Length: 436
Ligand code: HEM
Image (cartoon, rainbow, N blue to C red; front, top):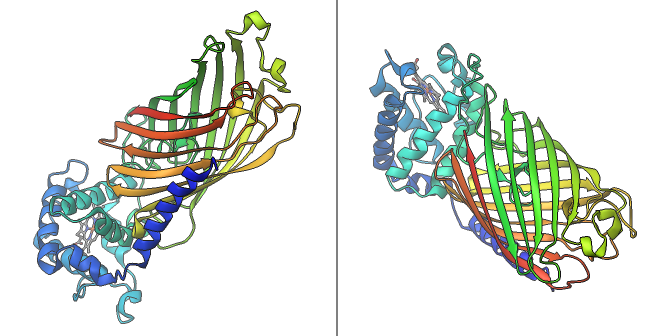
């Protein structure tokens, strides 16, 4: 029964995404969504205006024939959108009509020494141009889905090292938000995405504060996370769990978590033409700092509640796929853990003291460039007799007004926490992330 809201929410999301997938949405609906030839002309005009005013990339276009690039871009976007046009330029893709010359986007751009950040800057300008002309995010994502794999041909250079200045070169929202354990991802489950906005040539970092408030407890988490070269993520977080209801109103348990995540393969954003997700391996070292507020009962350590240890490791493998074609993000995580309530009630217990594999799932609809709406589910082991631990789940909305700030609001269900209080703990979740 308890799982019904999660499955209702996930079901709703899946149903809506399936409905979207099943809509007779032919390629040429993208063309119509862009406003046909006239719409595409207006979009590329605005796009090139933005590009030529964009300090990140405008210098690359000096000395080039802008009206000609404009013309070719119109043809290319129109052809990719399924419209009645043929790109007439230097670049033809055999797969479009079987009659083109060899794939040559690389040779068009190779002398320009384009970096990851420059590619994304240009794509951002295109997204903005489409937005300004009232193109829906759903349609605009479809065009970007076609262009994103060109990253492999177009990006041929690395930016010179500038360690003091993060480039903030990745797309908005592609660092995810901060989980309650500090890693980059959703709210309760880590994703394979590397936190921050640093590209492969740079780094990014953020601080976060998250509060989950249920009827009887609250959990505050704060921490710092850094992503390096879009490959490695380091995070430090402190959790502060408190009881609000007598006789547990003085209860306070703190836990420190150190996290390390390494991207192993794939790219969640650029690999739009491949089924391969982005895959990352992570480890969290958790150290429970003891129990406060139960001194009268003589309880100061989680081991006195039956946990076998007050510190432990979680290992996880995450796979994240951003499917721009359907404006969806899907993540699956498999975690090997002994942690009770994430470690807040220690590790292992009278009912089990071995590492168990627990699945975690997130699905998000990329409703807008700045907004993701989704649901998450996280299964947990049940090691402690005093705590009939259940899965966590939530429905969330994450808003990314800029690359410096994100706000996530959610409704979370944390299951029951301790047998002394058999009520299902449900409540709101609010998280603020600020980054550079
Ligand atoms: C998804 C990304 C991109 C797409 C779809 C794209 C598409 C194109 C197309 C269709 C052309 C015209 C080629 C022709 O004349 O047939 C072109 C040329 C050009 N692009 Fe890109 N481009 C992308 C990324 C970039 C980036 C990131 C830069 C620089 C920051 C850039 C700079 C240029 C320049 C300067 C030319 C003129 C080259 C020439 O005429 O020799 N492009 N691009």
